[in-house]
Image: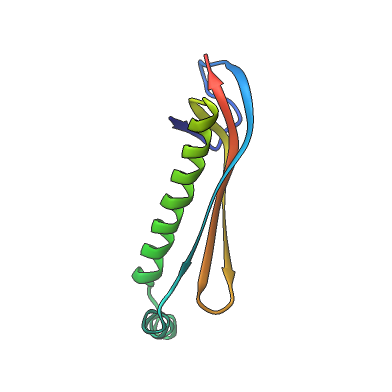
Length: 104
């Protein structure tokens, strides 16, 4: 399945639109990870633990979106948008949405 942030695919025509599809996930971070990330923020540098959590959450959201599109009979999802939100002190929500289509 082709996933793209663009509204069209070069060299392909959209033969059928199936509508908006969404994948969402919420992941919790541990207190230990929060403390370590805070220390890294104080001294500078990147928080590898949080980056890994974000990658995992994004992969889950994209997979759920793709599965929803496949159930509709789509072979591509166009105009994909990925959003990140924090919920409370230790929750990360990631959602992926786009338009499920059939490319010809």
